[in-house]
Image (tube, rainbow, N blue to C red):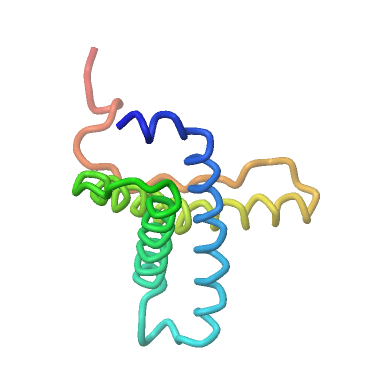
Length: 125
């Protein structure tokens, strides 16, 4: 475990790079695979897992680390983080760039979702 804790700064940088590479690959794949045949979120999941596991095994080989089962589980969890960041981080980045391009400094208005259960106004004091 100390092998991983020694390399936190590199790990954060690698995760960021994996998110960027995942976004690039998915954007290219979306041009070739229509959305009706294969959902984009599934493509993101597959690409992020493949890249994360490939990067993990390459790093383990480079550092001459014996791969233990819980290292692989940790790599899969990190792959899920990369997947989440690639799915939602890219959309937020596009929204921010669009706002900056339009010269607007206001944040987009969030539409309230459906209310489940009693609201604050339903309680009597």
